[in-house]
View: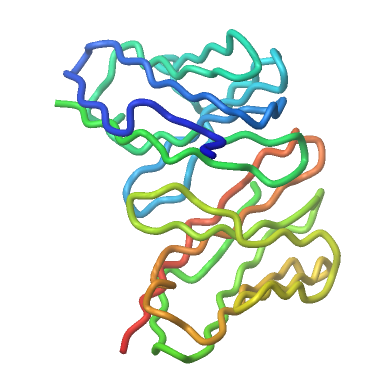
Length: 111
Length: 111
């Protein structure tokens, strides 16, 4: 009955090696979000899609990109991961203005 | 800015009652969410307040005062499994349901 699915749950990459995290949803929600959460900190919004409309947060580094090929899927691309990008990456969905449903997260390790 | 303030840590005894406070900037306020997050896991939805007053849901209740920019989460009959971080998050008008999170309150339930 998984509603927001993230793959992989754990990802290890090397410094500077591009990595893609994926998120899919079965809720048919029109809004999808990507958050970065570092240890003992609150989730920090990177960007979100309202349908196909991409909205980047002003302080999201250019190193982070996103794609949403259809309603169900959304990808987070980190072009050149640095050590400071090691974090939990959370995908969430909502039907606009209501509760956000979070996926289980992908924990990224950068070596 | 839209600072959301919560205590960093709290400790309470099993079976007791604990209240976790949250204050936020009132300008443009739309709604307030409480999420529970266990270590290494994604946030899970607890409550949503739009109007003033108390919303009760089992052992958990959430209160909102829009004029004061104040909310609290009340946990009754504490159990060991309630040890987690509790995140207060606010949506503001004109921000397409983006959540602005507080830094979270880490609750430790002891015997």
